[in-house]
Image 1: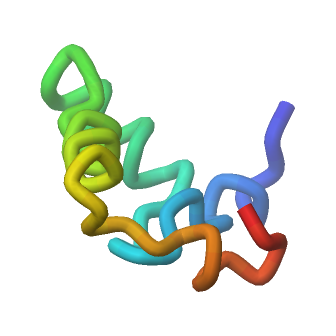
Image 2: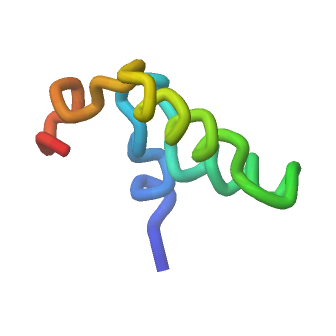
Length: 57
């Protein structure tokens, strides 16, 4: 089970979304609109997480 620290970890360094943000979004909307936004931005080159993420991914 993830700890609260794990849930606060950023998943998207470009837009500042954490595990908590994505889980709350999924509960509120029935699916994650955040993940859809990230995927859409990646397709058009608007995401730079590979460079911004300290884990290099």
